[in-house]
Image 1: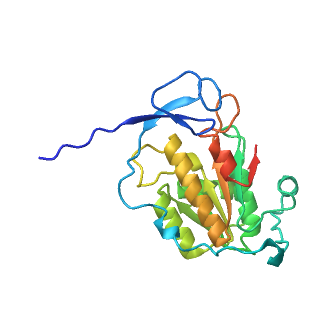
Image 2: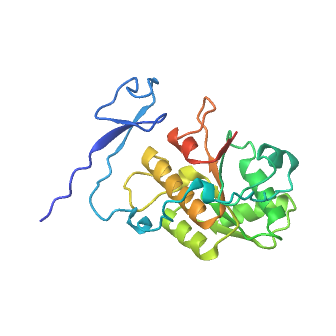
Image 3: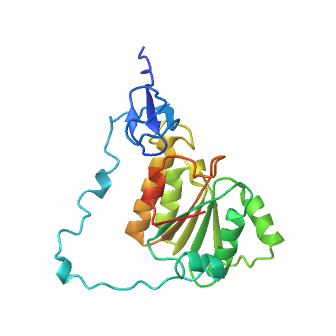
Amino acid sequence: MATKAKQRSAFVCNECGSSTPRWQGQCPNCQQWNTIVETIAESSSGPNRFAALAGTTSGLRALSDIEPREEPRIPTGIGEFDRVLGGGLVAGGVVLIGGDPGIGKSTLLLQALAVLAPHHKVIYVSGEESAEQVALRAQRLQLPTEGLQLLPEIGLEAILGTLAAARPRIAVIDSIQTLYSDAYSSAPGSVTQVRECAAQLTRFAKQSGTCLILVGHVTKDGSLAGPRVLEHMVDTVLY
């Protein structure tokens, strides 16, 4: 009878994403204190998850031959939100929004999507609340919900499949810490899951042109939870 291989632990820095063979008080790479957390080391066996991207490159091009074009921004109709976004959302752009629990991240984005839905295809992916809870909030805010599509789901593969089929102009993921991929054994919210889910969603946004808005939790000191590399994957970080 085959025995199950024992899972190995890895120690990853929340700030820079580097790994160490054992826990340390200070990260040897970024020199930050108390940022190393234990996670499950993922096996490198099996098919390469990036194999599907092979051959998709457009090849080398001379920069002088490329005609730059200014992408029109998509205004959300919420003045201050548009201001900090530089005029609105950009096709293929990835925005990370963080804030304290209950501060209004989900409410703000639901209001924005309600404004955008009559003119663009939009999808709200809810990983924290049920469809009924989101509908109750929209009703309480007296928001028009015609055309606003909702997906209560936390499985990354199911979310990517739905987004690829629907091809929305704007998609909201609420929140990135609730998502998990079947390719990894660690729990939702772990360093590995947050980093890899964000990376695959960002890759989808860049390839499809969908504007993606990720909601992120914050820690007690007010910084975004999860690996600091998450902030470097996206185009804009808003608090």
